[in-house]
Each structure stands twice: as C-alpha cells, then as structure tokens.
Length: 160
Image (cartoon, one colour):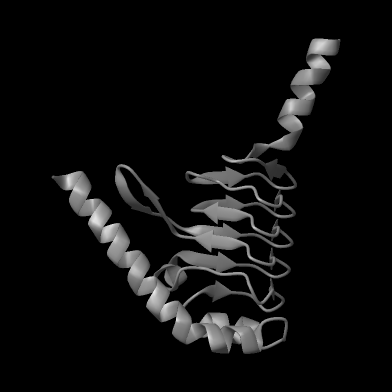
C-alpha cells in the first residue's frame, strides 16, 4: 500500500539524484579545495558563506541543495555527507541542514537533517539517523550519533 509506494518514490528519488550527481561531479571535483567551491555550491542552491572547506569526495544529494546552509569555516570532510532527507521504513522525511561556523563533519560522517552548532563535530563513521541539533562545541560519535562526552560523564558518576 502506502509504504510500498513511498519506498518506490524513495528509490526513484535516489536514482534521479545518482544521475544528476554524475553530471555535477566533474565540476565539483574541479572546484573542491579551491576558493571557487563556495560559488559553485552556491550556484547549486546551497546557502553558503565564503570560507567553506569542502573536500572533493564530500557530497550532498542535489535535490537537497535548497535545504542546506553552510557557514564560514564549516568543514565537510572526505566522503562525508550532509542530507536534507532521510529514508526510513515509514517513507522519506525532509528537513533543513545547517552547519554553523567552524563545525565539521569528519570523513565518512553524515548529518541527515538537523544542525551542528559553532565548533561542533561529527566524528568519522558517525551518522545521525534522525533530525538532531548538535549544541555548540559538542562532539558526537556512533550510529546513531550521540554526544561522546555523555558516556564518559556517566562512567565518572558510576566510579564516584
């Protein structure tokens, strides 16, 4: 029924994204790591400040461009992903993505909807699986990502 139709729509969206990303990939790879990357990503529809660090294998789905805002000093590292949509068994959900000044999504990390406050970080291979707000200066790890200091604080409480 509805779930199967939504799943089919998600597959079609991903297929269209794959086709459009191949066309943009050449230009993206050319500008990545240069001062021109800000302008290039802006042309795709992303709200971006000058001073973004976007490495050449970082990516975002093309249809999400208008959902994404990136502030100065934000880093989207090698093979990291930021996405304004998330596919679940319930269907596709869309939401805004915002990386504040000096926030970072490390290699193979992913932010699916939500935001990262100033100086916040998503560690390598960590992914948010729902819309989240990572507060200023916090470091998140795991799948699904959580504040990595939370576990350390709870261990300190047990030892005390």
